[in-house]
Length: 67
Length: 213
Image (tube, rainbow over all chains, first blue to last red):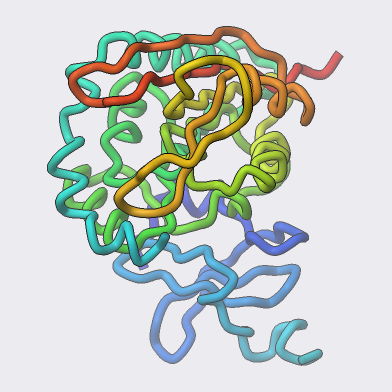
């Protein structure tokens, strides 16, 4: 993904812990995964979609293991 | 609201693309804001220089902030608005997000602009919105809020016939009071009469999160 460097640096998860995000791939599509809640946020056309209702648990993350 | 702005994104963007070119008073308060953000970031007190344009719509103000030398990014809920913003302003960073649940860490921003975007927040939730702005702003960070104002300073918010989504006009003192209540200090207050762009009077409040003592 070609995410703007400013966005990668400044974005945090909208969850209550506002965890750091790391770039990953989910089913071949780019996502940003929260280190605190484990949700994966889609990045569509290089636009991060930082909405909790459009995020899914990232496989193997803490959130998906506990749900 | 998401669907509402998705449907009108192109029309809205065409209508307001050059609005600020015709609004010198608005540009003046924006210039004061960018000056304060740049000064704060350069002062070396650890205040970041990044500014979020919250409810950026088609991104014309985000682009103006960047031309003013500020590290600005745009946040909006509407996918169609953000798509238009990217098309009109290549190279400017945009993200989809909610104003009341911002995708930023505590104290990570040097400034927030909410340019006519607080008007869709239900009055009972305005306090929570300002608490969220206060959370993401670093101590010393600047907040600029603009909104359609009521005709007089008395009373409370009144429903406003907005084409896209329910909205309210507010008396400036009430917004100032709410901002003060969550910890902001007012710097300046502007009341602008209806102009060629807006049929309602506008109020603009410039305030900051107090710096650490």
